[in-house]
Length: 338
Ligand code: SF4
Image (cartoon, rainbow, N blue to C red; front, side):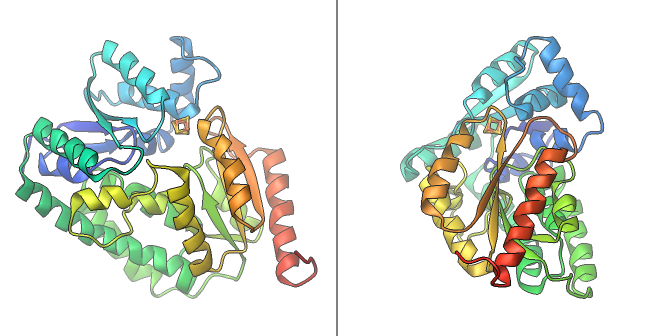
């Protein structure tokens, strides 16, 4: 891929990252950067100190804080298909001198409109179709390795839910360095394929945006639950086979109607033999409302949990998780019918 100025480009969610790599820039998924930063809680405090309301999503305040802390001056902000809070966030960041390129996913997956957005973005970053095609080929090879890690999670049982989460969620920006990330995936695959299968546990699916809880997966494993499906994280890894970049970002379910996500969720529940679902909702997020549809459409036990700020799982949530996993275990043993 082309050698550019190596400047960091912040991303508010998954976008056609092939274009950023083709331009020789360094994509930075601001969500991942926020949640892995040791100072993450202070970012929220700083955002609230300048006037972000208490009842604004923690991810938005975290992105604000990490953008300034990392000195990011350029950003691709998704203005349709992600979160309406992003509008105000990008305007506040603009006042702090950050250059914003807005990217909009058409709600109805309209191919023509999506192609126009991708072309605009290519023009903005000064890259050609050929350069983007080459970048896609490279990134697809890396994604393929992460898909194998995903398969080893649900089919072979040798990868934990947390490891699965971390690899999948990192594909949005390949941690800013696809070569290093590919090396990491290779080393992990070599090690994981030699492991013995993990102890059998209740098979869980995790739905919703990534958790702001810092230890959710560890907590679930400790309670005897195994997350074998990380829904949106898997979507960030583009689990489809297509040579066409427009089609790839049309098949990506996250930015479109919830019913598109549901089709994928139903399919994966069947394929992965899932016993129950954890639906994670972020405090003050509009996506909480989609829990209504999820419960109407899916006939598996679902536990909805809510997180607000980056912190370990609180005692009340832990107790609910424990009861849920236990109920599923008894249900699997035929002690509970339904
Ligand atoms: S969790 Fe919800 S409110 Fe927060 S940034 Fe994501 S979509 Fe927006």
